[in-house]
Image (cartoon, rainbow, N blue to C red; front, side, top):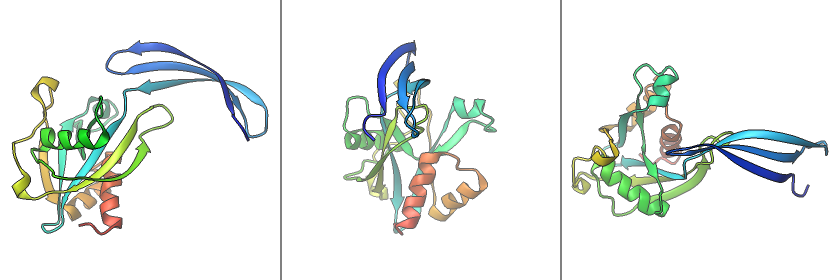
Amino acid sequence: MGNRIKNITERTLHKGWATLSEIFFDYKMSAGNWTHKRRESYNRGDGATILLYNKEKGTVILVKQFRVSAYLNQHKTGFIIEACAGMLDDDSPETCIIREVEEETGYKLPKVTKLFDAYSSPGALTEKLHYFVGEYTSEMKVSSGGGVETEQEDIEIIEMPFKTALQGIETGEIADAKTIILLQYLQINNLV
């Protein structure tokens, strides 16, 4: 069908921790006619996420932290149980996720396995997440974790049976999309 998008213009509406832009463009509909569209796009950069698992013990490591956006959207406490994650900044996805694991959980992983990349919410966010899994043992624990104080992180580390985590999806205790994706990946591939 050729190029269906042309005449793209962007206007910054807000620039803070992330950038909210208003985008205008001409779009060729499936029927062949052109239409002018306006959208808003939120750019906060790309990130990486990982699920730590211990096959021998049948456990996973998750983190719990306050997420104001979830709280404002009717989550009862705003404290979300999720997979470890972080923004890439200027790092490669692998370097980022190894750093984030140590900062958030206190585990120093010698290696991680890259799974795939996926857009978090492509209707409004530019963010692409790089998904990983990593096997951990108790010997890899090098610090208490809990996040970086200068970033005002306040993270609780949760080690739980894999089956309990899967049940958490059904009960709504685990309601974070990236975490659900990673838990189901482990389940589908019989990693735990």
